[in-house]
Length: 112
Length: 114
Image (cartoon, rainbow over all chains, first blue to last red):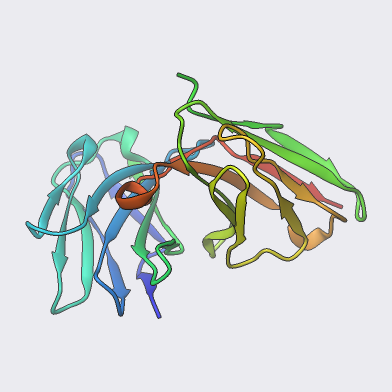
């Protein structure tokens, strides 16, 4: 069965510092991985995706993620965060029935 | 292009009442789905549809009904509301096939059942 584990429920960080949000997955089918972002009082929007090819994936707003098959991880990184990055971030994996399975989310709080 | 719209934004129901959450999209997407979001549990799939006239159950379908009579609309019906259905509900749509994972979400409906 497919599953996603987001290891940190909350990540506090100061503005302009680097950040890494961790995601580990379990999958028995070809791995498709995603990060979605949810800004306060809004719906989710796609940040980036890995379907195949280069293991380093770049997304919107300066975020990137690296697919690591040996460690079954897909961590999200940004070298310098802004106040506007404060949001909840969800990692997701494709299920064996072609649905999205979401992790429990990581709340990123950026402080000035 | 309005994207995915949901109404109402907020709703309070008493136990046993019924209601319909509305969802519409103007992107001509074949695939539409309903999720609920609960603290510490992420998003869970309630029902989905791969096209007009076709619906199927997701992970947590009990207590909810859906129908898809047009490509644009995908309403979610709560038959007899229970406090366990207090949640934030999101509708999403996407193209089918290889882009089914690039889902566009509506702004959500926050439902409280007392």
